[in-house]
Length: 258
Image (cartoon, rainbow, N blue to C red; front, side):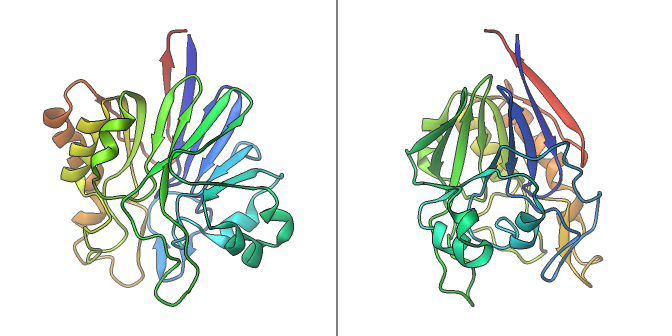
């Protein structure tokens, strides 16, 4: 029996160990991102330097430059096609040389682990104040398990092409009470995404971590509830999937017969 371990560290930061490779997704390792403050949980305590960092798009709460500077070792950075110049500008040419740029359908390998970029329905720009742009992507990581890390996305028709999966790491909410649904999944749409991808296991992410400073009492249910609401809706939309709502720093281990 081969196993895959996944630890959720809040927002879209996940530590995934599969086939002996340590993968870190969209790392936010600090207690603050611009106007957002970490409201629950501790800053991630990584067990060792990652081998691979997956970055889904350039938004600052996913491509967090300060957190990338905190990483030890010399991990490969898998980034959306077009993002390497931004890496060179913010982190230097040495880090940019460790980048692997992927567009949807392209893949790379790390030992026995394959990483393939897949579509995401989300804006790929750094933000309205920046001219830096690259496409937004998700990733399918395939080793002992077949795992989808969605990044940030809305629903898209090609989700059915990802099926079947062993594990889906699905965004189910956002970081603010007025964050629009365009390019994002709420709990209901996330359950529909899960129905489409036919995953054996699912872990909700991208909620319950960051919130605008000074707005802790405004629509706080949108901070606390998305994970549990997703689990309730998934029971109806995807009854064959086992949903695990993780606490910050909690680990799920799944196995797949060889």
